[in-house]
Length: 450
Image 1 (tube, rainbow, N blue to C red):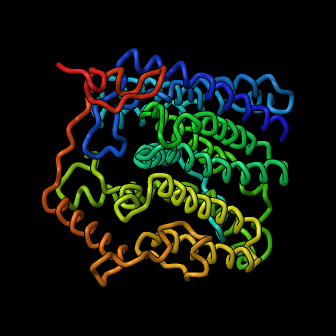
Image 2 (image 1 turned 180 degrees about the horizontal axis):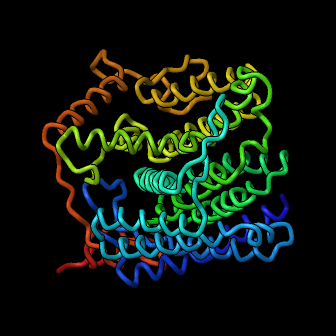
């Protein structure tokens, strides 16, 4: 565990220290696209944050290769080299897209090629454990198709959810932490060395996300771009493939006994293996809903819109930071809930705790729908928006009700006559590397003429 922690810290430090210079490089090269209608941010922000994350990945793998307890991962398995090859390819495609906006089909083809490169080097699904049946071996073509599909789905799920500051990096970090606990338990408790690469991949992935998050939290100074979102999606998929297709289920000795006992024992253990996408259930749900919504409206599945889950959280009244935290909460609840159930399936306390936290999450989701008023004796201890306000002079309507009515009228007017957002040119004034960022769309200073 000490070596994993050291690898995580080195990866986070390298990613954090390189993000600042990468931001200046992105500004100098003009990797700051104009603000689009679906964007949430208000001023051009540099991309290419995936450059720092990729070098953090390389640093983590290099450090792990020189550690005594982790060196065996590189000696006994070719999976780290397979991951690095696929990550380099998908990273190059992402960098080109951040700079030149390449076609979506070209990116999809690049994702498939990157997954194929990993398959050729041995990072593929060899078998699938089925509760009550045992191990089902896959042919080469079946394993290849399943591996490519898992990689493409995971990459696009992470890419789709990358819509708010710090959202994708935080959710993937939560998923990686849950996956690390599961794979480390298999490696340490059962003594299965085949689970060690997945533990290493998730530890490095957590370092990449934690090192980038301080620069990406709201208001973000830099975006990871497709070079970062596709990269962390591929690393997460590689960890899922490694622990799913490389760990021999028979080594866990859970298929012994009667059929009913074997099924009961296998189900919780293999929930994260058979359904690795439950770890990123929120991004995958967003991906599926986006595809259904766009095809239903006669649009391309790759057409961008403002119908994602995080956009809807903003529409119902959540602030930017609260929407991100709510997405964090649900991701952690699903990911760690699945892992906890796989460890203690016979305990009802874990189920009751998950149900209780789900109820709390629903209350948080619906919080903007109502504004409770605190009693007068507690008004001094609550924020001003929960206090009772005095009535408007000359009117029997309370002030907060009149304000709500005015806000409702403004909202209706904005829906009737939508205001078109003027694209802000991507210049140095949009987000400069030194000094405060300007909020004026042109290059003139405030208060000057002509």
